[in-house]
Length: 215
Length: 215
DNA sequence: CCACGTACCTACTGGCCAGTAAGCCTACTG
DNA sequence: CAGTAGGCTTACTGGCCAGTAGGTACGTGG
Image (cartoon, rainbow over all chains, first blue to last red; front, side):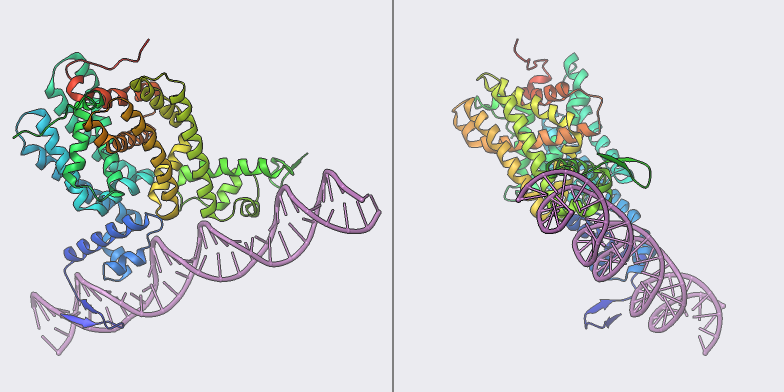
């Protein structure tokens, strides 16, 4: 059923809680992404979600709770996207990495707001938020580290796998962040750029050697 | 001359403007770094600077002005540190890069608050702040791109120098950011890690080949 | 058709904080 | 010593916003 509110806008009425929660989370991600945590107001979020403020409090709790819920949902989405990408690659480590990177940048490109909330906003706030983030990052690093350990059992690789994974994950996060401000690139191009950088190294790249996706 | 204020603390009196401005900027960097732009209050900044709030407004202007002044000062410091590092290297591009990275991570390690304000806070706020940041990043990217162009005149290198420089700068920023949360590493170790990653690439690293600083 | 629960609202409060008004104190200058 | 300029303060205001009190509609099972 539908009604016209004071401003004459049509507003959907009496939807089930599940639907409203999704609307609210969508709106919150959008507003947190554009304004930042502190500058975002619950009034604006409720307005974008097309619902009144008390409903936001009834369903998702305080502003902190709401923000944490945003982070959790978006982090889960992202990790699922990456895992799906990696799992559809074969067993060549470079190809696995390539698919993982493509899935990652694909996600960031498609859900820019999600990424902005996850990386820029959450890491700028301290406390419990950053914790959620660190958990996600830890999972990503584990994934990459396991992948790198597959490539070789030389001592050097074993010794530095964790650190290198952290560096790669960091580089990926940062490149995604950079990409937010340079939207002219395609997801594949950004992914290829990072793949070349970390797999070949400048030392080879300047000699004209490049990594190429197979087939 | 010195007096005791109401709380019995000793407070320096009637210092020249120049000194007060430095105190205020130092305090502002510290508070912005720890609280974030919005959560930082001018009251707290003035308290940390050991001066009254109207003096902050008299000398540095509004909260926005103050934040912009912080970014400008810290960005200048950082770029000077990097330039000094690079200029004391010889003409081998890898060594120049190595010195630049060491200077960069040395700065971040020594002035963590500065880095936090520069990267985390400034990039989380939109508008004029991010602009200051983009300027600094552009200068850094130009520096690195020029350095990379020195390594070779192959077409591949020329074509991608800017993009690769952007990726490297992004990776460096991100690794520095990561380092904020992993203070157990030394600046040199973090710099070496990134140097290896970008110069050798995983493809070589897993075979046990590593880049070594000369001498 | 009544009772009860759930969806939903308007309209407020209390606190925090950016920014300011209005002037005091001290050092120097003539 | 009179004048003045700049360093410095206390004590306020006005607005914004998180969070809430206290309701009104709507539907459904008995």
